[in-house]
Amino acid sequence: METFGQMLRRSRRERGPSSNPVVVSDIGDIGYELLDADQARPLTDALRELYAEVYAEPPYEEGPEHVARFRRWFDDHLREPGFRLARATDADGELVGAVYGHTMPAGEWMQPQVGEPPAHILGVPKFAIPEWMVRRPYRGRGIGRHLLTMLLADRPEPYAILASNPAAPARRIYARMGWQKVGRIRPKLIPPMDVLVLPLPVG
Image (cartoon, rainbow, N blue to C red; front, side):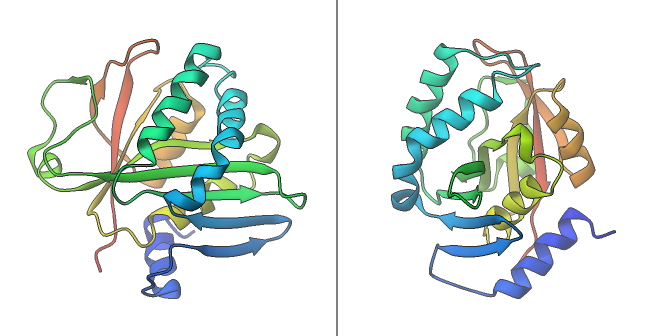
């Protein structure tokens, strides 16, 4: 079975270099797009609704305060360098999944951190992924995996980085994909999170 790293390398070879941030593909009844910040901004309300639905589930059980915070954070993330968002829509054009990220400059780390991060990762740029979300009825079809592959295939950073609730089902998925735990953070309002990194293909 093809590993996630092999999928990334194959996707990079197949797509080749491109200055156009928009990548469109269709698999079955699901359409996929890779968008830049200007193209993603009109999706803010739909993403907020997706966030509210996904994070109302256990173990997150987040409420209106968390959803409002996501809206503020997403506005900030849109202004970060290197922003890209991959989205999946159904046959009616409804959003069923999304993942996005941006460049985290060398020397920066996820906050509030616990302990010292590995120097060889701290000292280089990273592609930070704040959110990866798929609606429950569409899980188990490879949609999330395809979204993440689209998002990461052309990144110039040597690592991707994210934070994951250790009690969430997604944490096991990340482990199978090859993400490695390198630390922890203690955010406000939510439980402590594992900091995970994934080496990205070079070239």
